[in-house]
Image (cartoon, rainbow, N blue to C red; front, side):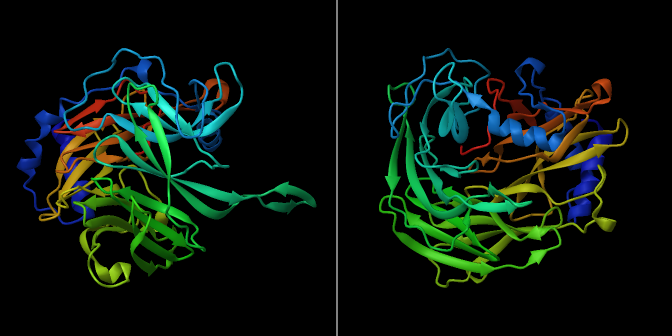
Length: 446
């Protein structure tokens, strides 16, 4: 990253909030940024399709993972052991993650089912899976504990509906009836690598579904944010008993860009929950902490703001590559001292974007640190909006796992063709280290 690009980053962040960091201090970080790496083209996962929206929806739904048949709903088969590939993960970075994916029923079988799949980020291999027991939908949430072995997952129990379209009766979107909760434990290298047991967490009638969830570091407490219309409720449960321990609620309005959201839950130690309130995407957001032992039932009154951003929207809401905007996926570190997030900066000299990850100390929120940056490759037409994301951050807020969202747009024969060349990486210390062994999105619970 040259001085022109770094100055652009400084100016864009100063536009978001007052910046007091001396320019020379940020320019001194250039040497660390030169250590970044690009993922080899052969290792990239590609999504192809004639139109962007259709491609994304269809290819997410049709991506299949070939594994052995599931023997029962509580245990998964062990894949054939494979050699370790890819560079070693940095110390302290979780090796395994769990995500909801489509899996084939058997090799060569055209049938498929949704399952919670455990993947080894070091090798890129799926170590096993358990099929979702009911009639699941895409988007079932999962949360991870700090031991890299314990996860909690939720499954929606839905009811089919029918609608009238031009006088015809067709199947409509399913409606939520309840939620089922499960504890997932992974045992890499064993004959039974993914094991599932039911959790006795009761469903509260009227909840529309899970907005976000987080498992405490020791795996004993689960924080869940639910939405019911404009009302958001945050509840904390005991994982061992399923008992509801505390509950807080808040009713939010709706901005011109959609409803206010409560997302990106995290635990600060085992007694505080961090969460993000986005009032208007790209414009106004804040990170709050909630002491789960404090009195009161109002989510906003019982919590306190530890970090916020406000970036005025451009005229008519039209965003360009050079338009400043609020960070994407702000996430509070486990020590409660740092908020990390993704953003982008634009270099006027070569007309290219860079995906950028920043760390904002809560004590000095106007002085963000640069965790890493990766410039848009010359064969990449665009960096998606958002340019990057955050899935996991370490306790100190110095390293994270997230996605780089690259796109290549070509026009063979006059037909627009989109190719997603994005990848998942470990970001920290000025470097962006792609997880080259992964050929699927690592969006999931780490």
